Structure formats: structure tokens, C-alpha cells
Length: 337
Ligand code: DAH
Image: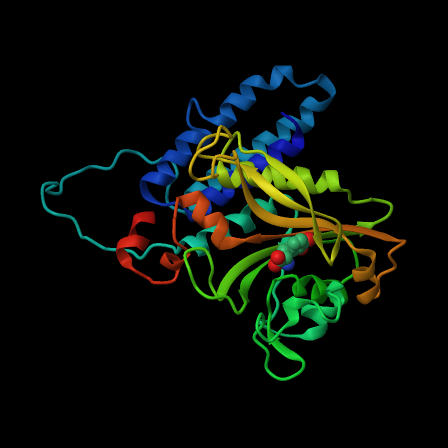
């Protein structure tokens, strides 16, 4: 295990503890600092760490242990002596029904947690956009069909409900200098007729990483972060593949597939027997986009990607109809409690 893997492990453990309570908190204590827990196991394995790295490594593990113990303590889950029980345990307890997190909120929250471990922060932008941010600066040709009144909700000549989260890329680049590493979750709107797989209002998560030519961002970097995301979001063994595609704002552009988490790529109903499920569009930021935001395309490189949140939620939780996500039927929502 390397120092940076240790840091990732630490961030993950603290995130888990920050939202846990009761029995989950105790399970996390056992998992991380219990006698057979992860941190003691790492300490035991220190003899295999090269000698010159050992002091720094040892310090980092001890710091991790202390932080986990403090975090557990802060949430009331540190190791405590057995309480003296003298109440009547046969009486019914107080029953308190808590609401459950909506699947879309859960996917957005988990995505932000996963990408934050890779150094991404969350950026935001308005749902009412102008034509420049939603289309022009994203290198969309002037008569592209996506700009039609039949595809996009327009309010006058220059105001529209954003059709994608990509305009947040433009806003972020105009307001900041590289390096930029953001994800932008949010609502998007298209004039689609609602059916089992379409909705006029849905959600996307945009991603953007731009850095200077001294640290040239590459398609291989894009693939590796998406592979990490796939594994964290869908489970071990899920891999990614790229297929060539076209988007006006990236060159080259790809469509991104996850290997099917249900059949592990063998072919089943979920992946329509192909072993793969399409989840995102992505690519290297087109130099023309850099020009629109006043970056010098000779000086910077970047990648971008865009996921459908509904799509991830539907495949992750096996939801066959997108409309179930908007109907607020408690029989459906409570299942994810
Ligand atoms: N905006 C695209 C869409 O709505 C998705 C997308 C594709 C976003 C490629 C990107 C990208 O950032 O690089 O279909």
C-alpha cells in the first residue's frame, strides 16, 4: 500500500463515519480500528514497507487511526464500556420513521464523494441559461437541430432552460484559470415526450479537468478516472470502454460504456445481451471551446464528460421506468431505505 492509497482510504473512512450512526457506527469502528480491523492490519504489514519510507508511512497510519477514533468519538460511537442495563427491554421502543434519500439525490451525493477523492470540487450554474453558454461557446453550429424550438424550451431569443450541464464548463472556465477540476450536477430540460426512458426534465453530472501544457491532461487520464468511478459506483469488476462518437465541444469524442454489473459482461436483459451499458459522453475539450473562454488552446489541455443521473440510478437500482423517479410513490421510494 502506498501513501496516496492510504490517504484515499482515510478520506473514505472519514466520509463513512461522518454519516453513520448507531449499529453502523459500531460496525465502522470494528472495520477500521477493531482488533482485526483494517488499520491494525496495515500496522502489522509495515515490515513490508521499504525501510526509507517506513517513518513517513508509520506517521500517516497513526494519524489515520487517531482521526478515525476522534471521528467515532465525535459521533458517539467510540469504544465505550458496556452500559448497565436495568430498563425493561421487553417494552416496545420509540418508533420513529425517517424519510429516505431519493435515488437521484443518492447518486449525486455518491458521485460527489467519489470525485472528491480524486480532487474534484462541485461547481454550480443556473438552470436558465443564455444561448452563448448553452450552445455557441460549446461550439454548436448555428443551425444545429438541438437549438430548434421543438427541442429546447426558449424564453425569447437568448434565454432558455439549459439542455445540458455543459454550460457550467463555460462559466467555470470564464471565472477561473487552470488547473480546473470540477463536477457539476444539476437539472436539465429538453422538449421530450415522457415515456419509460425519456423525461422533459432530467439530471446530468458534468465533469471538467483542464490543466496547463506542463501537465498535459490526456484521454488515458480520462479513462482511468472513469474506470475508478465505475468501480466505486457500480461495484468491483465493472470496467469501462470507449466508443468513438461526435460531440461539438470535444475532439476526439467518445461514448462511455460500463461493463454490465448484473451479468459481469456475459449478456443479460439489463444490457440487452451486449455485456455493456452506455452511461456517458466524453472527450478532450475542443480547442475552439478554449478560444470562446479566452484560454490559449496552445497552452492548455482538458477533458470533459457528462453522465445522465437517471441512467446511473436506473441501472444501479434496477429501475425499469424513469417515471417512477418523479412520481413520489412511497411504496417505491421506501424500498431504498
Ligand atoms: N452534453 C452532452 C449531452 O447532453 C453530454 C456530454 C458529452 C458532456 C461529452 C460532455 C462531453 O462534457 O465531453 O448529451
